[in-house]
Length: 120
Image (cartoon, rainbow, N blue to C red; front, side, top):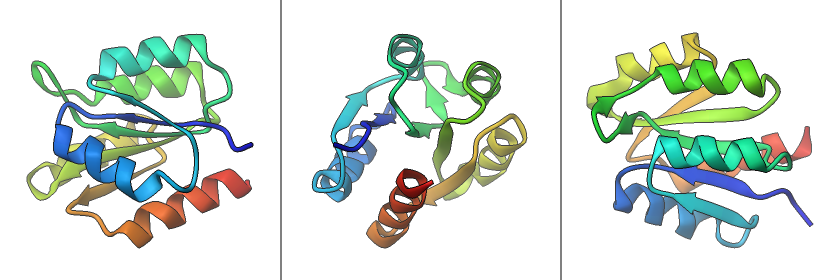
């Protein structure tokens, strides 16, 4: 069995899109906030891939990526944002995210990222 993938995004449409794309590829844990994602990551050590939205309840937050990288440096974390937040996505990478995807993303891109991560 593959390790679960964590999807954390404040926008329901993004969560639903990722769920549809990944439903047949892995088990999924889907949460509505960065804070909830941090809670899940503190309790589960078998997650190898996270799709994390740049936004929290207060706006854009890239500090969460530094927090995750400090605690779980081998975890693959993909920052997810829209075209208006590309500079913030780059900041997330600077702070420890493995990469980023700009919405609308292609299903093939998500699946390729998932396969690459689960094969490592």
